[in-house]
Length: 201
Image (cartoon, rainbow, N blue to C red; front, side, top):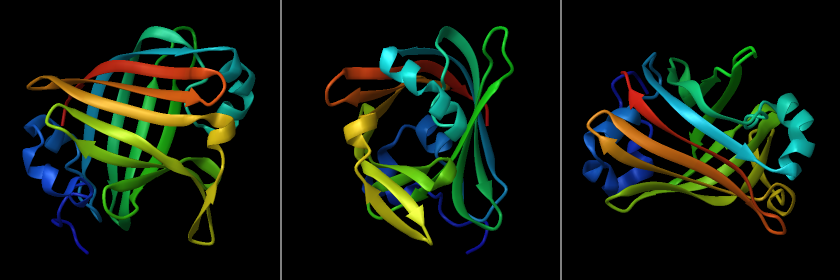
């Protein structure tokens, strides 16, 4: 595969790709085996309860989620490709007051059909299904995996960490809103971050 191939997410969205708003096509237009980059700037609110507070040391170690709360946190997100493979890399930079920027880096790999696995450190991944209904792009929980020796082994982390969900919606020609929540089977919604972004290119 070489630079110039279809965007990584075109096959994920399937027939819905052509009906995506132009801003969302631009947002997901990274091609595999390239050095392409898309940058988004925005502000985010991060809210969580006591359960996540207990997990903060683990979150810091794994680099997963953001172990700090706040409102209107200036945030920059880089969507990156890799010239050597078809990884879709997300690097999120949260500029919290009186702290060094917190960086959350992950990569997303197509997993067949409309499913994608987002991998964090140590090979732990969140599997989700992308869809577009004409108004919202949604990411629905399909389980957790642990990548070992190139294999994605399902692991029952939802019983402990909860189930993820995310959505995105266009606000204007160059801005959109998004939110991500985690809902625990016993404690209800335990984590949420939400915000608005502009796509810079």
